[in-house]
Image (cartoon, rainbow, N blue to C red):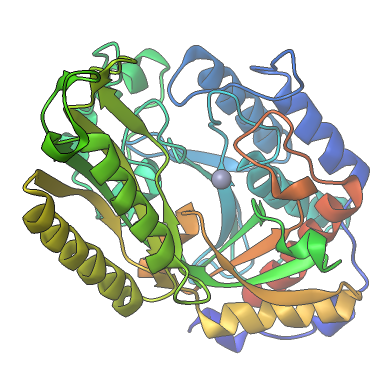
Length: 423
Ligand SMILES: [Zn+2]
């Protein structure tokens, strides 16, 4: 028996609403752990604050009667049994680690929206056919330990556990030892945890929904990403005595590549190109720069388009190196394939938004999410809500109580639809 034959008596459930005030209260309470002076949150993965956040969410889950399983990378699964133990759980969640100067909503919202779904069903004594699970994944942000989306990546078999245990932060502390320190190395092998479908509610982290007055974003997929380090090697020389024609100015050559990154990105509607980090050596006012290193971030909606961007950038660099006589190295440091989300999940989210009277639109995600790795394993979908001015990874991050409530109402409907309601 599979979960998708279970869409029954759900239409009678369309009047259900989550408790928006309670969800908002929990969001604000969790945000107190690591609260910053500017109203944001700093709860880096596997720190003591992360432990406190984890402990709080688990305490809330246990108060709702959920059973808790932790895997060896510290992912936490909180389960509400259904009537039919043969069925795979319908899972929803996100992450509770934050950026160093992060906000209250990124990640935390998806976890607490899922918990609010459970609380609502408990209030109303509604039993689903399939079990429901709330999850938070370890280290989605990747600010303290790289790679990003670490816990869901290990769960999906993308990263080997032992290799991830050895990853170090800037102080040389490893993921393995820090997981142990906070007491979150569980028993279960990552991935050894059957799932039927996965949903993640999240703030958009971009400006589109707000700009168009939409309440729900039906996420079609996540952009494919390639990250590079680029190094241009020229020749340091004195800014005065060295005439322009005899210079090998690494910075001037680097800026040509940076501009090319932007124009390549502009050629397709969902193309993105960013140079976000630059180091100039020796970084002195009166020295012609001898070496410049900078990051390149390319994104697009399909892997084919990302590959085209990659080819175009490499061709440009090869030409430029020849013309300028400078050595230019472009090293790919990581890459994430584009992840289209399941059409059925998208339809369920769009249908729920319509039924609930929330204006919605299709949208792509420019940022990575745990749902990407879950989409490798099971039907997965994401629900976006607007965030103020499109700002996230920032202490000023804000989503309104009304939108926070709306996204969780949609999540409630799709979880009921996928889990089936015992009639
Ligand atoms: Zn997030």
